[in-house]
Amino acid sequence: MQRLFALVLAIFLWFGFVAPQPAHAYNLTPCSENEVFAQRIKDSGNATARRRLELYSQAGLLCGKDDGLPHLITDGNLKHAGEFTIPGLLFLYLTGWVGYAGRSYLIAAKKSGTPEDKEIVIDVPLAISCILPALLWPLLSIQEFLAGTLVERDDRIPVGPDSLVLAQKDKRNVPSQSR
Image (cartoon, rainbow, N blue to C red; front, side, top):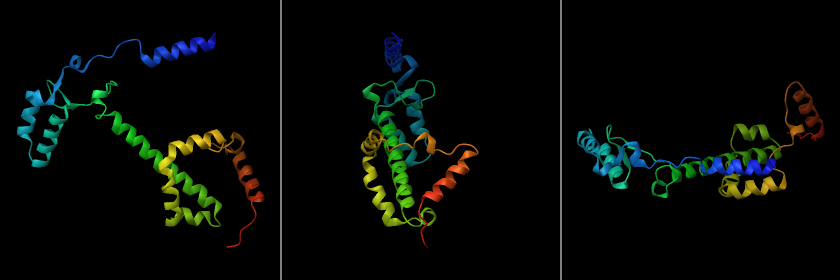
């Protein structure tokens, strides 16, 4: 019964109880038809700013009736997906790529003979060999998660005063490397 309640609650929260208001309800008009926005274009100081504002009006962005400023609409309507959704997803993909590549580099550096040196001075061939496969980071992360290697076991995470003991145990278990 609890699972059914949780499922129903999740569905209601997912779809929301109230239908989202259309953009025109928020006192927005297309920038190409907005008088205040047209005045902003005329008053813009340089050609770059003027060109940018003209691109806003051509892109179909909505501007406030009173302020004439473009507003991003994030209501889930695919008509406005280019304003926030696509750039947001691209940002998440790129940050995930950088994070996964960095994580892969640190794991590979840890397996080498001198991990501290590779953290200070970047080993470029090793870094490139970590960056390129990381382009597939969503698939690789799912694969690692299913294999159980994405996250560390709770008993391996140093917390509090016992973390020093854990670090000393790790040093004893690792064979010494000659430099």
